[in-house]
Image (cartoon, rainbow, N blue to C red; front, side):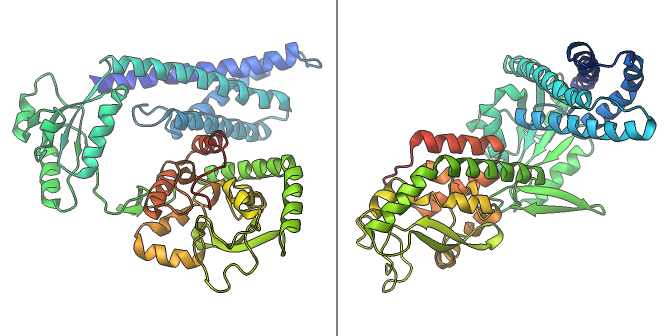
Length: 458
């Protein structure tokens, strides 16, 4: 029944989207040729004739970008990104089609206005529908009933997530082979034989999740459900998947990519564009402060204004990270590379204030502009310390799957300076695993809100 409803809903959603596309196309025409000056008259029939071609391309890209999958399984910002991506692809393909099919040259302004109007209308309607579905599911309607099998840690994590997100509309009606966990989560413990007695509660899906040592149990359970008309999904128990995993298929052979970076090529381009814009803007605004600090450094201690230190960034690339010099020029001649500590006598008169307020980090915006660093990311470390940490913490090198940053998730949560390396890595890996543009914006805002002063900055 739910499958039938899902198909009907997807059909209705397609009709709504096609209506939005048609309205956007006609509205773009109306604004350009009836509201804005200089509009050519008598070409409306040509716009109407091209509408079916536009709608066909539109529907193709919306379907290809999975915009008719259930919203239970992906977040709102992924849906918004899919809408933007689909509209850009649609107008690009349509633009090419125009030059192939017809000699008539249409208004470029109209072709620009169409996707803008379409994105605004589509996102607005989709968000309204999403909110209504969330309310409906949270109230106990439009539910999807599932059975879970196994006692693996990943399955337990999945169940916890469902518990805290009732708006997904997924309800567990039975747990097979829970190893005693079913009672802990107030879920009915059942056996394979009990499924036939569920009567009206026929499951829409089975989620299987044993730990890696119980391959026989996994195989047995999957084989049992292969005899039934119930879809099966498997939660693999992959060891050391700190950043998650992706599954690809090569000639029918499944390949699991473990701990791959979560940032797509498009995401990298957007992040780089934000870095260039943000670093340029900051360097322009902070240039008076930049000059004042440079003068103070020069006149309060002997030596250069800037200090360049070798650090490591994405994929192990080494670069020279710049700071305002806050220590004496011979600070590491005798001691070698060591951590800075509180009341460190190697610091200059001005150095302590610069470090406490993080003002010594300002030149790193030049590193961001050059592309050595990003505005947000794990803080870069010195190669000499990396050699130590990677032996102590197995997951340490995974932080180099993304570009190093001026500020990061670990730093705004207090894990900087002479604090736990383990906790710092935990927060760095969380950032990489859950990266999004909005996460970067949140970190930047929290950096400014919480301020640059930190008790652990020596």
